[in-house]
Image 1 (cartoon, rainbow, N blue to C red):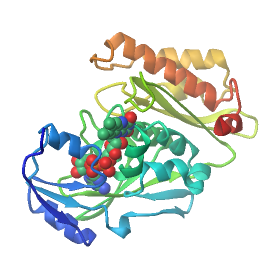
Image 2: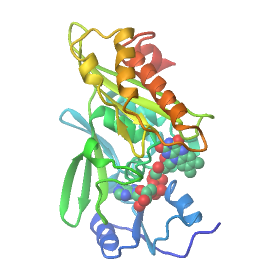
Image 3: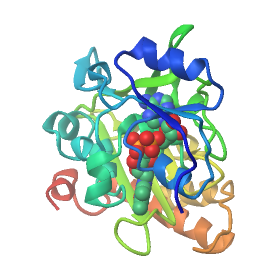
Image 4: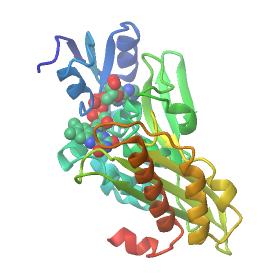
Length: 295
Ligand SMILES: Cc1cc2nc3c(=O)[nH]c(=O)nc-3n(C[C@H](O)[C@H](O)[C@H](O)COP(=O)(O)OP(=O)(O)OC[C@H]3O[C@@H](n4cnc5c(N)ncnc54)[C@H](O)[C@@H]3O)c2cc1C
């Protein structure tokens, strides 16, 4: 199908982009177009005006700030996958990027677009929940810094107000005590996941777990944080039986939706197994982080 008619403006400044969208309740930002254009073509979205933010240099770039990495909203998925600074400082995020769609889509899709789109089956929201990321936004009322746990809602909803733009995302910089794991299952490489999990953890000098968080993919109506991991794993030298117990506890709280790719029960089992595998990776229960990085 063809998209419905709409006006189109290439924004030349952040303020102009925000003003244009704020003053028309049917206007939308467009970045890489990899989610919005299909929605227009299917006529699931009917904006009167598209404001193109892809040429705003202020939204580009990745820089270190204190103990975090600030990733501009226009950063392409492919850059998150390949840029050495992201691979080194946010290895979970660059690993997750490699699972997003196909190369052509990763070359055009933007990080900010994927965050704003907030698809339950998308990789980045799960990774950001695991990492404890902060979403930095701008609107006519000023800047907000929103913890990822308060940003993502159900059914493509987020904490964004109309006319509010994702400017950047800040993720904590990994250090020698950081551990991560990522696992997902899709029918074909590049398809949206049927289920998956991203894990971020920290160990102390003795190898005991001091914190652990997981974001789950396609585990509910929106990007979902795993429940109950901390109680089971923090303060311990994590082994396979501790992981099994943590996964069993988390699995009970999962409520994925049945769809053409599988029943609720099947999808719950896929998410739980993904979580088990991601935790195994994070706690080196089979293969080291370096082996996985070079795999
Ligand atoms: C065939 C196919 C397969 C795909 N597979 C996957 C997959 O496996 N995993 C996955 O995660 N994604 C997948 N995607 C989606 C892809 O990752 C998109 O690029 C991404 O979701 C949106 O980024 P974008 O820059 O293209 O956003 P756009 O399509 O331009 O915009 C998406 C939405 O976000 C809003 N928006 C964009 N930028 C901002 C901003 N900075 N601030 C506020 N709002 C903004 C827009 O108004 C719109 O509502 C797939 C897409 C296709 C076409």
